[in-house]
Length: 92
Image (cartoon, rainbow, N blue to C red; front, top):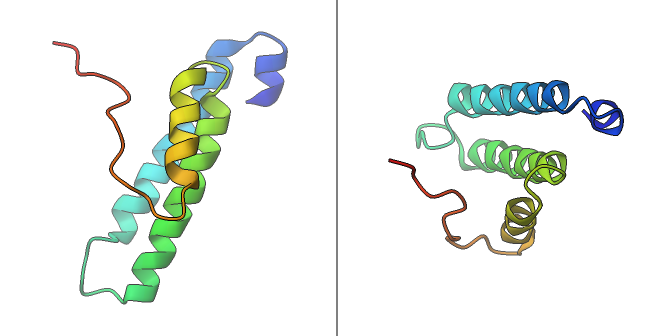
């Protein structure tokens, strides 16, 4: 995505970023960290990978939505993740 941003091909950069987001969503859906029949260590690993992915996504999106990306970064950089504010309000 970075090379496309540097060459002002923003549509291609965003396509790559959103493809990565889709892969991350699929990763979480397949591994089901909410499923209590799975071991706690396994669920922690899945959630840890999800947090790493979210941090990476916030970096990738920062040229496009800098304020929201910064909020995501701060929210997921804390020792204990707390409920954050709504980043994107629902549009009716």
